[in-house]
Image (tube, rainbow, N blue to C red):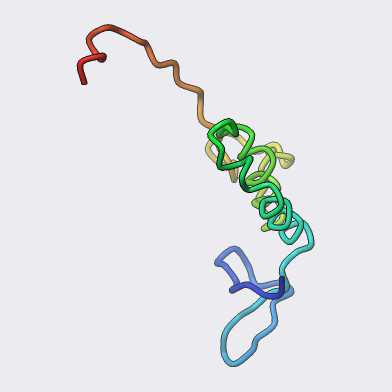
Length: 99
């Protein structure tokens, strides 16, 4: 995989090359990319849902980038790195069928 540009979350462990900040891609991110590439047809099929995407790819990605995805620090709701949204129920009615 190689290197990616550094984000704004912190500079610990970053190396400078040609005036640009870079970091080595964490192994977990390399594994996530490899897994996606190996099974991308399944993920793009329409049977793979948002929750699966979040749990299998996004949560591990953000954890690798230093986010406290599962609030292991025990912060109050307003201070969490990640706030999970409530699910929505969509009411099906006949009035929408004409749209």
